[in-house]
Each structure stands twice: as structure tokens, then as C-alpha cells.
Image 1: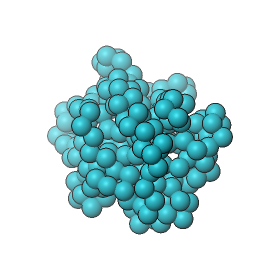
Image 2: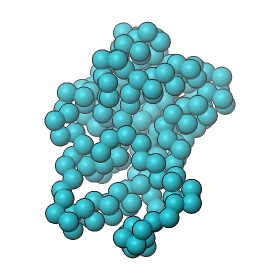
Image 3: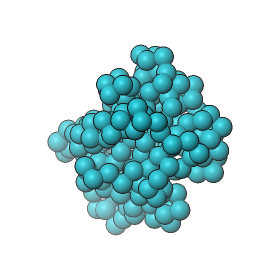
Image 4: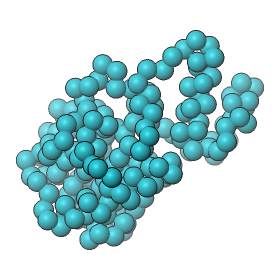
Length: 198
């Protein structure tokens, strides 16, 4: 399982069958982790084991360092350092995995709408020149909802005038990695993978 969990569908008039309704009634809340854990347990009850989403995909997990030509400026580095613990805090609460920061102020926080909508909102609020930080949960279950970025993420960053995307090394899947990196270089977007200590 990789990519956005569209749990906004819960509010779009879905009609669950009896089994899905029973599952929904069993979860303590409707956060992504609770829902995915319930689905995983339901699959396990049928003998289906979910493997980590990184199985066979280690080559798509970045190692620490700058993945593009341009390193972050001192201000961008300060915004990254400011944003990582904030992103970790919202990830711990299972609100989202992404924050946008400009001049050490959080300008957008991801919730159910997803990373690209968070980036778009940051662009509307700031007019560009911001940094985006995307992280895994502190106790990330590698079977689902691992952070993922792809060429669409880079295109959205470029359209909104973001300069830097900070991600976690070894915990973020880079889908269509070659195209993603080429798009980041072409848009002069810094992509940096951290192995943070917080």
C-alpha cells in the first residue's frame, strides 16, 4: 500500500456493506492509523498478511543528504530545522505528515486533504518562497501510510513557488524516482533527506 489514504470518503455519503460497517464501529476514532490498523486486522482474520510497503522498494528510499544540486540556504535550513519537530508532532497525533514553513512560521498543516492541498494552501497564503517538511509518524507502521512523494508533488511545489522539500531518509518512498529528481532539478527545488534526531 502506497500513496494517499483518502479517508475523506467517510464524509462523502458512502454506504458501507455490513462487514465494513462492523469494522467502522469497532475503531476508536477515524484517524488514518486507526482505520488502516482495523483493515489490516480484518485482512489478517482472513489469512492475508500485509507486508511493509517498502518490501522490494529499498532503492526508492533515500539516504541522508541533499538529493538535488542546490543545497538549502541558511534561512531555508532554519525553516527546515523549525518545521521537522512540528511535522513530527502532527504526525504523532495522526493529523497529517506535512507542514509548510516560511520565516520560521507554520503557514499550512496537512490534514485529511493530503500533501498537495497543503502545499497549494501554503502557496496561496505566502505567494511562494516557503519550505515543506514531510515526515513519517514517530512509530510508523511500514505496512501502510508511509510518506510518499512523486513527480506530482514536485510539480505542485513548483506551481506554488516552494523552494525546498525536506523528507525523512529511509522513511519516504520516492515514486518514479528518476522523473521526480529530474523535475526537482529542472524547477530548482531543493530536495533534502534528513535522518533527524528528534
